[in-house]
Length: 605
Image (cartoon, rainbow, N blue to C red; front, side, top):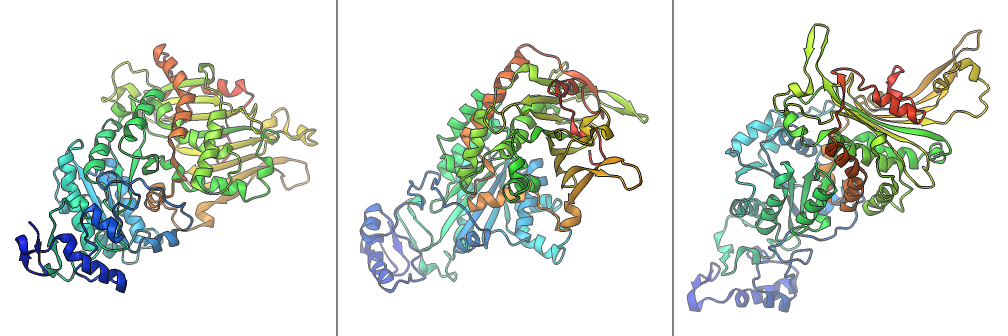
């Protein structure tokens, strides 16, 4: 039975939903204005089709299925923001009580809010199994929010405004009923933001006899968009996606899902995960995040190469002798060994972070800056790479060490790590790209924990000058005369070029000097965190910095054989002291290709 609050009639005398709103629909179309009492609530497929109103969500898919439309490529943040004025965005952080959510995701969302980068109408929901109230969630994340160093005006007020947009819902990750409850809360917030509750006048509403997912839009020209961030272990990705797609997807706008690494453990498990996700989502809805792609210096990589004439002609085997991608941390697993032991340093760092940077570095000039054009070129690089061989890999594991009277633990001393674990905490590898531009150039990767310093950088070592007139001034160590371009991703972001220079004085003494762009000096503004950029891109539908499924397949194809061999043969990692430069084997690997690791010397190393 329907009750029309405008006519105050019910039962047989009440007009049907379609009959009653047919006249109003005609008037609305004639006058091109909807009365406040009719927020485009027309029910029934036949009536909508007959009267010319959209029956489906904006992507043309059934309303109880996650939205899967293809958006136009994003080109400008301000333009995208204008298009969002008449829409809402609901951001649900699944796994809201975890460390990643507290330390990275919520602070990044607040930073976007502070910079006025989020849509005007947005809501943030936390979802986890932990029992929390809205206020408890706000207190929890409020401790991690900070304002920009160079922008602290009204910081407290901004924080309070942001926290008032944050809500919480407790539920199981595999419960469709719990996600349906979340959906009701999301719709309630969305309807209020979109003016569904018009002036608090209940007479503007009718109770339809149709289910809620038959309500096509809350107001003409407006859409409710939803973003789910899966800050959870990968073994429950599929359960959450299944529940969200069936019961909590947007009925009128887009629905997108951000998936955190690791994306499987090998080619087979990664493929199974992709196929399972695609049972509920389309590829365009899946945003596989690698936060290193959002770092400022990684984003600047293509700008440096493609917009500076001095570099692009040099970017090939003719001038470049080797490329080094180096990642090191000066701390161990620190109680996270149980998680880390299941993956190891190769899966955790090399197969994703460093390989993605390599692909960006080595790709050909894309047709445009469109996401698909860039990702197409990255895939070509990955497919051109030689499958990694065990002879080109060195693995290590840090051992206990005493330094300055301080005892530093071994990896296996971590109580969360299985005794006798052979999981590598360090790895070095030599990779090759078999194409015309890079044939024969070694790309050396090195990644490790509990090393002497914290760094992430790209080092490009150029070839020696043929017939160098000054080679005797360098003695037998020609590496001192090597020009080197260094892109330091973290910390202390910088780009510098090592050149040879005469030391002032009467004698002919040469020195290696640096042409240095230190970001902190040149750009005093605080550099946004990578998660800020990636979250904003996901909201705006920009996929350039997210990983496509065929990229993932190509990446795993490179590393899966050697990972399987390491584990099947139970190859013991070379031990190295906590706080050292890593195992000696890494130096032998570099020497095999006539390369010296660039981070072993110089004031900037």
